[in-house]
Image 1 (spheres, rainbow, N blue to C red):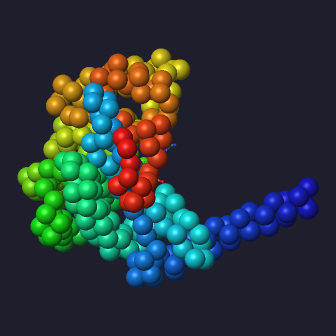
Image 2: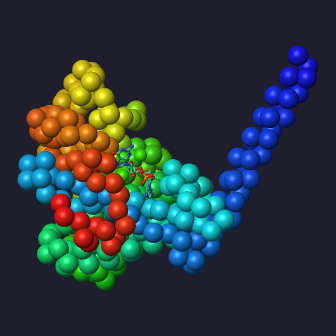
Image 3: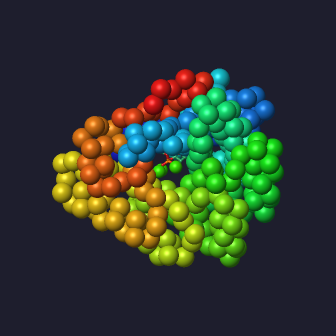
Length: 274
Ligand code: C2E
Ligand code: CA
Ligand code: CA
Ligand code: CA
């Protein structure tokens, strides 16, 4: 029993070591990733269920590093938040996504919109709003074609000026979107307090809608509630035709997910026939 205990302990510390080493390696590599041009944006189209046409896309960050290979955003974004690197990385995302949008609109001759994810600490940067304004000017993109996706984390981060920041963003004409709706604690009160225009139902609810009556009821009620509040509803993580049909029946406005399209590199989205 003692031997087993010692082995278990050794094993545990090895695992911890591996995790800590990886974390350190990510932090170290992330410092030079921007200047080495290792970040790329992929774009996942959003499809209008009434017209079956693309309305816009969500920018999703990808990182390929020569030492670490591909690192997923779920792994590196939290570390970028902790180290403060999310500020320059976030600026890169805003700039790249809006300049791509201007190219995409011109190529397709469509009034597409672009959704960008924002992390809590980006709101702690007093420069954020000015940076967005300058980038809109530079790319000649209309604020009404830009959507900022935020999660409860942003609203919970206990900042006194968050209300002010969100109002200022909305006053520019930029749309605020509540991401991952349904997964948090007080999403409903946030909807009442802040100027949201779009609600994205989390993919964990969409997953079960065709087999699970409860998930279906929750999604149906969320869509009805959103519409009575004047919000546009996006269903995330739609993976099957059956889910798409059911969401159309439930009056959902937009869908996003692997069934319609995975996130694509810029070049592929420019050639996409939707
Ligand atoms: P999110 O904003 O909820 O983005 C949706 C995630 O679901 C993306 O993962 C997307 O690739 C994935 N997805 C889309 N359709 C499907 C589907 O049909 N099935 C499944 N299983 N997954 C689907 P990704 O790209 O790995 O991003 C993960 C998270 O990282 C994002 O979640 C977002 O919170 C964060 N993130 C990504 N890019 C950025 C960024 O530029 N800035 C910030 N602050 N966060 C980002
Ligand atoms: Ca998002
Ligand atoms: Ca989401
Ligand atoms: Ca998410």
